[in-house]
Length: 325
Image (cartoon, rainbow, N blue to C red; front, side, top):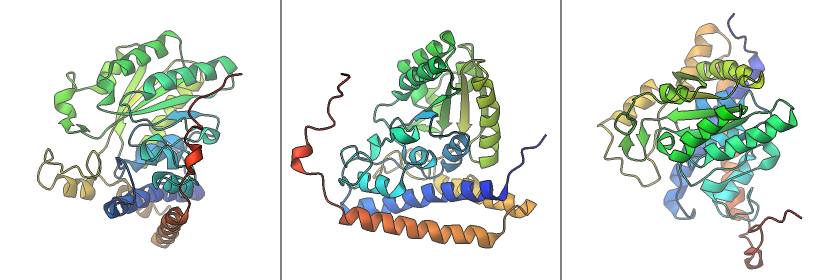
């Protein structure tokens, strides 16, 4: 039976993907001003994965993100204005301006944090999944990672551990074709991330990450499997990124006009608009209205971030250690 989508669900899915896209496109411009410190890795092109995955989750479900984490944060419900303030290093940021782009977190939303260490999310997600299994409330934990992360030993160990303890965990691998500057076809010996994951004894599938509907329906099946106590899963979503590995990356490793072609053929927002127009689910006017609202939100987020105060100097020793007493 085909999945039925309500009008409200489709509008919200588009809003989330558009918000991620405009958030990243605006950062691409703002970084050039020199006001934003540190490395930034943009998520443009991969929006369907974050939104299609997180649309199934609530605040009690947990995700662990990557250095390319803005999209996951927004899809999981993190406040967009507070995220922008965090990237600007302001005291009003989600982490009081101390985390920056690669370390945004909001435990109240089940967003356990972005991470500057490639592959670090796998073990964290398995630990979170174990806590979910022990409390018996049907929660799940999801680890996002790229094609580069699956060559990290910690991820392979986490996959094995998840199977051994039957953890309610899903490893979401966003294969955008490049581990930093190295092609996945070269770096992944088996050429098959999902197949290699299945060798650990878990359910593993491969799907189109440039189509929201495919992502959503794939995740529905996997989450049913995991929530029923049938063990962890891995999904490899094929996707693309429209910018470099990091802002300032000259991308000499990409073919001529590759990004231009991908923006034409693999843009998940264009794919979404074409699908809903073809089946009459949504009209262009409704989507255009969302576009305008999102642009206004991003403008406001940037203005408020610029006007917000920096963290006071005497905060330097706070949020460093956790007391378990």
